[in-house]
View 1: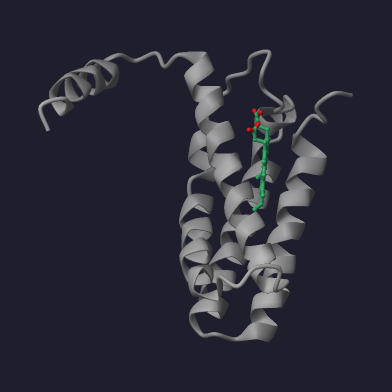
View 2: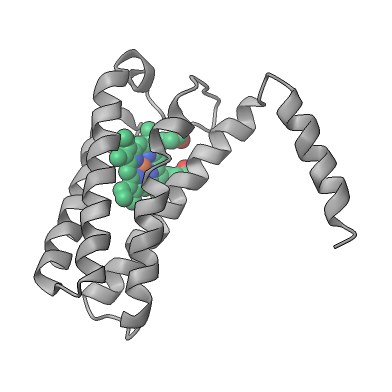
Amino acid sequence: MRSLKPLILVAAAAFSSAAWADDAVVKYRQNQMAALGAHMGSITAVVKNEVPHTDQLNAHAQALAATALFTKTVFKEKVQNSQSASKDAVWSDWDRFAKDADALQEAAAQLAKAVAANDQGAVRKYVGEVGKTCKSCHDQFKLKKGG
Ligand code: HEC
């Protein structure tokens, strides 16, 4: 517990400053995306019966739906660096980007509902729907890394 105090002080200092470090902003939104990717990977493996962890499906679906809610917030500030794979269009075409983020949010919420209801047909359907929203947004707004 003692080690918590300096952390809180650092956080307080960060909150009082207006400018966020660009690298941290980019890393944070990439972490959000990586989290979506990891939960989707786990969900797909369970749904395809590649692993036996059906008892974990609900937690991954809930986490995916909860994380999806942050998409617009973490991209709102226009920040790019050499590590970022975001196209300028994210901000120049914000309304369309926001629509894609909303589509992800909706599909992820439906998936979480289907998992909670143990409706396997709907689970398969909404895993597909979520996957489509990832692809649609990436096709429009994400640079292909390495060319
Ligand atoms: C509304 C648009 C949008 C949606 C929806 C979206 N992404 Fe992304 N994603 C992006 C953008 C833009 C980037 C590039 C971020 C950057 O590097 O600045 C990205 C990057 C990523 C990355 C690379 C992260 C890294 O570490 O560099 C992964 C993995 C990813 N997305 C997975 C997903 C998955 C899985 C979904 C669906 C569940 C999804 N994304 C939905 C826009 C989106």
